[in-house]
Length: 301
Picture 1 (cartoon, helix red, strand yellow):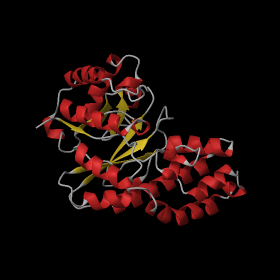
Picture 2 (cartoon, rainbow, N blue to C red):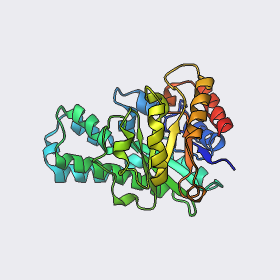
Picture 3 (tube, rainbow, N blue to C red):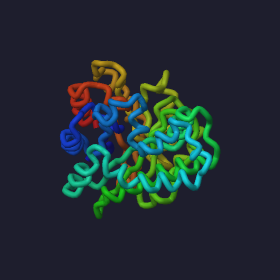
């Protein structure tokens, strides 16, 4: 049995939610809830799809209009709480994903939504000011409630959820999703080159998800991720998803280098499997690119 499993980071280039859900269960060993950034729900707005997916439209409007309710935190929290159920029920593909998960024979599945650090920065940009501590707390509470609702809809006895916070704008992780997600394996996806060694304590018993191609010298990260492997889990992207044509040779070489730098502890694999991904950003690619990428990952593992 391979020591590595495969999954996607989040976004996919499909417009059809049913097609995307069928694809993730057929093409990866760990299926993931697909983020359909080319769906009409997201393409008709100039705002980042990750924000539109995670935050109810009413809340986004309040931040966009710089509403006075932003200074009335109790009222803002009440509005967010009231809107969250309808928002979750409207997420493209969630109902299909939950139904398909009930017949899935594997143990793990993956969910990924925008993390609190990035959401705070995006909403701060919308309202034209940095968010104070009270607003940061409301944003974190709102994201926790969203993920709790998504997890409840995907609950299947005997399945283990891996919940990843997407943090492309974060350089540290001071804001955290709260206790409402007890029972899931937590983690963070970092879209930027960060100091892995400085974040070791944060990632104890958590996943660190990142792309090797984000680093100018991948050799610099192997010592750190070997340490992370001993205290948490790693989810590593090996493809340059910014190029229109998949560079299979580059991905293969990165994978070979990555695999040489792990001394696998067989006793930990069942709890937190090592996971291979293509990398973030495949939702901007063609469907053909994505299918070629998933086939390569399954060949490499």
